[in-house]
Length: 353
Image (cartoon, rainbow, N blue to C red):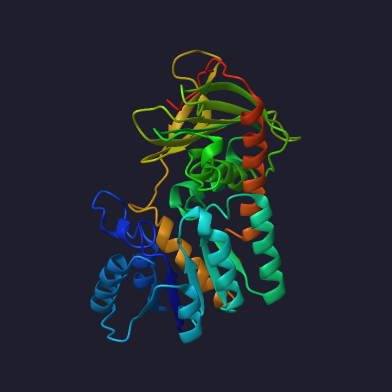
């Protein structure tokens, strides 16, 4: 059985990142939908007519379909077509309205770009709409589908009890500023959702009651650095660290166990286990393990395949709405503390070596 699909938002993640020659492809919803043989992409929507025309021309050529329909509002799209899958790939401040429009059209599945919404109040409205209409929503936390992070989760059982988890994000985008809450244009929401979610995914632990330290604010009062510390019954130290004044982009997580260690980040994955030391008699050292990974992580194509498998009744959703809402609530707890704290010195995060 094939499934029809429509795309709301033909911008970067919706379409144009599919042309980035440096990124692993597919890197956009359009390319991933087109690549899956069980999906027929039949319609697209964007308020930008020029982007929409470029999208239609490409999809028509790639899919060999002359009947691709385009619309400048989702209301007009849903009045005309009734796809099985609706992908919502718009800016954060439009997630609530566009996702609820999609849910109300009663497709078989909605794929929503992360984060769920600007805040948990909006996210709760989306959740209630899913219950009312019995429409499932999957959130694109892409690392849940990436082969290197899936391998890390499988390897966790070999490293003993988890002693600490350190998740770091470095970029040049402000971490938080109150004046950006309405647009969502700050890294805590935009990228922090991935950071919190991958900790949640790997450890199956919920993060609550953070202690925030190392806050640094720039001259405009925007937060540029912080560390949030959590502890659970199973893991005594979980640290989520973000920098918004770095001259590079990096995303990494370091899990230290009693018998080994896992370090995964953009472009690398390292796995270590305790073995008899070659350096010291009577000691054990961590030794790098050779883990065979596919050449491609498949982060986007695996997400779309999970959607198909779910609709075929072969799998559950690996990134359900409920988990993504939990991530958003953690970010809100951190955000509340960032609002109240005064500028503080930066504590350096421990990086993977």
